[in-house]
Image (cartoon, rainbow, N blue to C red; front, side, top):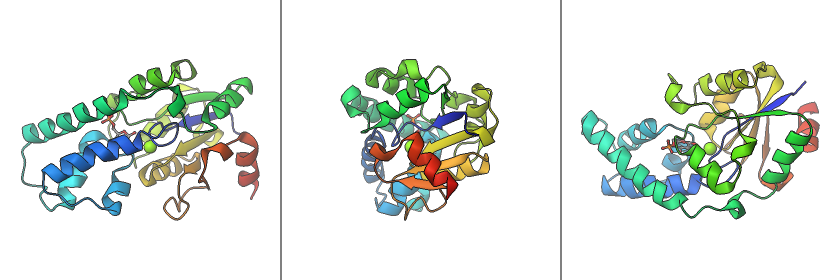
Amino acid sequence: DIKGVVFDLDGVITDTARFHAQAWHALATELGVKWDDELASGLKGLSRMDSLELILKHGGIEAKYNDEEKQRYATEKNTNYKHLIQQLTPDDIYPGMKEFLNELKDGGYKMSLASASKNAPTILEHLELTDYFKKIVDPASLHRGKPDPEIFIKAAELIDLKPEECLGLEDAVAGIAGINAAHETSVGIGDSDVLTEADMVFSNTKNVTLENIKTNMEK
Ligand code: BG6
Ligand code: MG
């Protein structure tokens, strides 16, 4: 039986995936790396440094910069990103997600956050959702980022549940892979043609309800 839900944040609760993409796009352009849909999709869910590495690889320049230069570029992106998220308000919560969080809370389900982002607490503050997530995996504590299952296993441990008792919500291909490898039920948010490995996919967050999830699990 499902007793808890593990949430990704960016692209699941709010559309910060678009700000990450915007900031990485600007950096890629500065580095002379061509931006395309494949790169944009592949970047979703990856840690900050893994994202930079993928961009460099995409441009065939993975050996061009030393660690210090890479740190500088990652910081430059993050400064740009932090500026973009300043504008977030509770109105930016995806349709239906606040209702879903309340449904879970009222139903006695446990919740934790499995976001790779070091900016997650700031975003939760802006969205006024901090009280819903008392349990947050610290991305700095991870040995491996998504698609590794580590973050999702830790998110279940934080709420004292077995992975089998958890749903995992994700908008990223890398995230769905991590949830599946952790043996949680994967709920994709986005395009079913992209999130092909998910146990179920919702293209509109308005439809993310316990009833709809349970119906899909029976299929
Ligand atoms: C994930 C995003 O949630 O967090 C990625 O999907 C991002 O795009 C990652 O790279 C790390 O975020 P941050 O804010 O720590 O750079
Ligand atoms: Mg995401």
